[in-house]
Image (cartoon, rainbow, N blue to C red; front, top):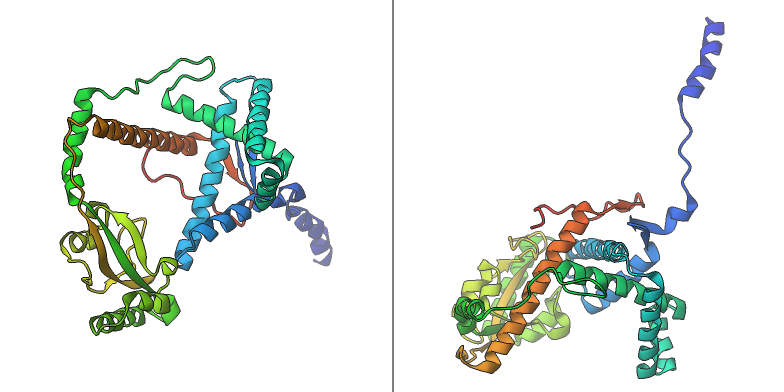
Length: 347
């Protein structure tokens, strides 16, 4: 029996394969997209810059922002690869790159140009590489939009016909008549105060204090989990652009009027998310513009410009969805799950 166990022991040892060896070169890589890489250092630099401009309001928003940044960096690499696949001569891209950089240095001054690169964590060689990538992305955009570029012909008609312009004006007239509103918002984090019920109670207390004469802006500074830099003030929005839970309030409220306390609304879905927090909203200002007549040439030019910009953004967003759906990319790091695949097919 002992002899049998000793004979089987080497077989059992051989049946357990050694753990796979990891390439140390890939430890600093987050994503491979096409023939390019997104490194952890680039990801962290971008996250730091974006959060300085748009601080997340909650841990959930922080994680969503991180995944959005990672997705955008991956998409940029796929755009660059698609631009490179269009066949423009590499030497021609280098000439365009150097000419553009020379012009930028002359306009900014060499020292200012180098200082800007250092602020972005780059040097002159990295700046040249970035410009070459921008050119490849530009080429991809022109191809996606069907516009002529280099020796390629246009494949899409971008003209806006007069009848089409009049139809756009008629569709948007009611929206223009709404005007725009500016809100002041107090958001109380459920996590910061302990639980959703405590967040709701804090907002209810703030509502009573405002009705008694206290300054709502000061309460936002004291209790708010977001928009503190503006003391709760938002940009101006058309009421129709708001979530349904706020749309009726913004359409009918008088300036200075307070909403009821409502759960925080998830930015992706617009659904109540009390686990994130509760909010109290004040209508701070309302603008009711004079709706122009269609026969105004100036307004037609402005409307044509706005429609062209919206159509361009729509075409590029659909093209980027197709890139992410069909592109060749891999999540290298086991620490990153990567953004989810699109839930709706690209149109």
